[in-house]
Image (cartoon, rainbow, N blue to C red):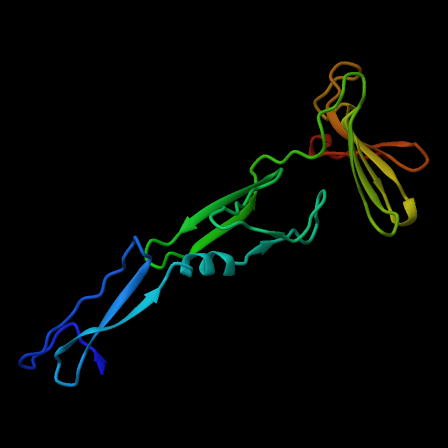
Length: 205
């Protein structure tokens, strides 16, 4: 016995098409004998009623957060038919590219053009941003006066850099129009002004 093919060139052989019965959720197969004649009453039924449940119940997909994690995280199963989204946090962007030919998805993360660090300052409170090294060095940007504080290894050799109205340049008039200069303050709190090309050359004999 064999299942009749969909097409046949043999004389007297019948062919049968098999379709899924949505009511009974099954497929009924009829058999032909070796000569291709259909055998009445000889059938086989394939029950597919539990197939969808087997596919659904056999589905397994979980997600978790790794690396520099913020907040709580745990391995969590993604339900059938649910979507996992890729989100960009502060100062980041995420771009989705789908190849129309291959169907492959690419998600690219990048830094935003505008980067904001920390929270907005509160009224009456000056904000600052600090970066500390493991050896005691640090860099601090102070919102109070717009200065930048630098400390060397173990917090030594520190200085503060800010902009101030300094000494006149070569074309300036004393006491009238001092130019804006970069001023740094060393660890002894002594101020030093940075010279520029506008100062020219001075000679003394």
